Each structure stands twice: as structure tokens, then as C-alpha cells.
Amino acid sequence: MSSQVEHTDVGAYALGLLEEADRRAFSAHLSGCPSCTAELAELSGTAAALVGIEPVEDEEDKGGDRAGEAPAQVIDLIRRKQAADRRARRRTFLLGAAAAVVLVGGGVTVGATISGGGAAPGGHHSAHGPAEEFYRQGKPIAGTGVSGVSGGLVLETKAWGTHAALELKGVRGPLECELVAVSKTGERRVVTGWAVPEKGYGVPGSPEPLYVHGGTAFSPGEIDRFEVSATGGGTLLTVDV
Image (cartoon, rainbow, N blue to C red):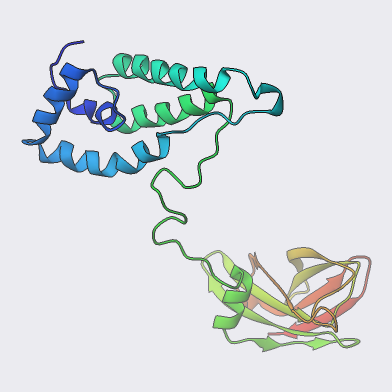
């Protein structure tokens, strides 16, 4: 292999796959190349994740020599991959290396992501779903229910119509329901639908309310009311707007 330095050799250098002459040449190159030095720092987590990974053995394989053969096959495959893709982008190369470990090893377990972390930086997980978040942040319009049913709606004007979030309590299942928008001319449009399990929502033993949301092409000015209807007949809640 030629000892000519390629910037894309940073991936092979991080994994220790360069031949000795190439390794020495690239090591000298690093002292005067800030970009390769920075890339090497970024790839250190990948190199650490791949070092020492071995196949997960089945009971029937214990005592055999597959565990000894697989790492050698992986290294050989990665070396040939590196030579063929010498001028490819470094990230493409490293993904290929990780894939080779999985394919040749027959299944491996890595306890962390390639970056060494868990959740993606900046990730956010809310304690509430989007329907509940929207409802809590708005100004609910209380509805009139039957047989202990209660709830309300939060409405939002959109260019395409109206966005609505519903809170519903006091219902037991099994039941299928729909939230229906009724216009001032009597036209009815289904906003969203759902199933109520036997334990129900907002009742003893299952105190959490149900939150759902959806949209209708009606503008708020066109709507007379919303109804929560049980499939097969019966209105559980009416919200006048």
C-alpha cells in the first residue's frame, strides 16, 4: 500500500487499520492538519465502540472456533472496504465498518450509540401528549354532558379551518365515539374518532381524562356546536361555540 496521505484515511487511522507505513505518514500528517485532527476527535467514540466487539454465541457454538474467526474476518472485510472506498466520505466508510461487524459477527450487543450517548442532543420529551398540551395551554369552553359525562374544548383558528382539542371525563366502555362539528346550517363534519376501553376515562379506578384533537374545514364562525357522539347513537357531550 502506498504511504501517500489521503484526508479520508482518518477513519481507517481511528480504527487502527492502516499499514505501518501509512500509519506513520498519517500520524505525521495530523500534526499539520487541523481538519483531520478535529475529525479524528469526532470519530474516537466510533473506534471505541467497535474495539473488542465479538459475536454473540449460541449454546451450540460454545467450544467451537467461530468466536476466534469472526474478528479476523471483520478486520479483513473492513481493510478491503477501506481500500476500495479510499476516497469516499469518512462517514460512509464508518457506517460500512459498523455494518460489517453486525453482518459477519452474526449479532452483537453494543450498550451505547455510536456517539456514546443516549437521547439525541436537544431532545425533549413532554409529560403530556400533544392534545393535552394544546388543551392545557388554551381557554377551554365547557360542555354539557349526560349521565356524569363532562368535558370541554379548546379551539384554534387555522388557515385551513379549525383545530380542536377535547377533554372528556366520566365515560366507560367498551364504546366508540366521534367528535363532530355541526355548522350553523346543520352540516355535520367528523373531527376525530376513538375507542373507549372498558375501564373508561375520568372515572373511579381510571381517573385520567381522555384528550384527543383534530381539525375541521369549518371556520370558527361557521360552527354552531361540537358534539361527542357514541357510534350507533346518542350524544354524550355538547359544546356550544
